[in-house]
Image 1: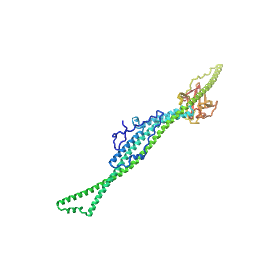
Image 2: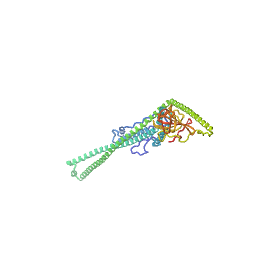
Image 3: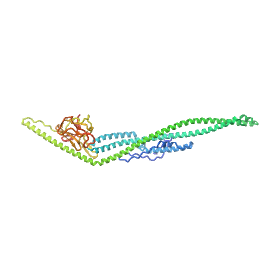
Image 4: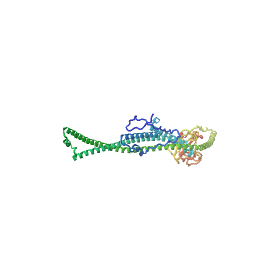
Length: 516
């Protein structure tokens, strides 16, 4: 299929001959990263350059000169049109049948989905240092921006192509009007010369008649006849002279009328040329702005790709640090579980001893021993109030398995993350005893609360990453009592409350247990 070319002025669609244009380069998709930097867009001709193409210097007003000028103009327009096709690398063609608006909408949908993934990713950096967490978030932000930036680049290039097409069309019209003005100017000059010659001839005849030159007066010619034949010959000469004078007068009137009409047309065409020059300048300015926007979008994509590569390299370099941090938090969790198991064992032993003593006392008194609540292995219902001052609570990260954003393996997120600002008040969600309020590696400042036995099970919870706590070990607290302030201590990417619940020393999903 031949490449299209620009239409000649007044030429109907489908009548143009093929103009050989260089093959148009295609823009490689940005979805398959990494990419090489896109090539720079070709600059749009300045207004003066555009007008120089359509007002050739020294153009001849003759027909052949106008034809040569038109040929040069058409070659210039064809060349400019080819340049437009080369610049608009993503516009038109079978490969781009999908409308720009649809591609932009799809990119925006992908960007919205990426924003949702960003929230999930923000939750996944729980347990990472600020440095690692920020590197992951920066990479996600770059990857989220790329699809929208690509769609914006395609839209900008389409706008650029349209603006350049319009500039060429106006330049075509300006060229036609300029040629018409030149032709009218030449015609008027020629007609004025003819009129001057006719006036000169009429003036000469009038002067001769006024001076009474012999042979000029019709009566003299008739009286000078020697015989009848000579009289008839002289009469014919007089008649021919009078007709010639009448024709000269008619020609003069016709030339003057034609000139008046041509001058009126010239005035209108001159006004049209001025209007088209202004319109051409405006179109070129619009095209220049479209080129600037397209170049800015292209530069942004180049920067985003470079940023993505740099951040991927940063994360790769920090992998050893991520492994060390994960090992640290795993070791700390194991230590906490051992401590809780020891505390639960002590509590169980004390409880069993108390139950044994109660049974012995009942038997000695001949009474039936009190019933012992059997552990159910789980706790149900909203046994906790809101541990934050944010109402309603907003969970940013759920309990469950998740992929480590750097190390690439699945790990347990053993609690839920509740949205808070920094230094947001935190409360005891139920009457409890403070087991400890201390720094735990990975968890930062941690407050561990013991709720005793609930439904026959040991129930405890921890609030983590606090800026500071206001309670101490062994202290009794009531539901809703202030225990500290949220923060970003330990391995945490942002201020929030990481809330964990332990049933019989093992973590469970806190969400079903949280009320208001």
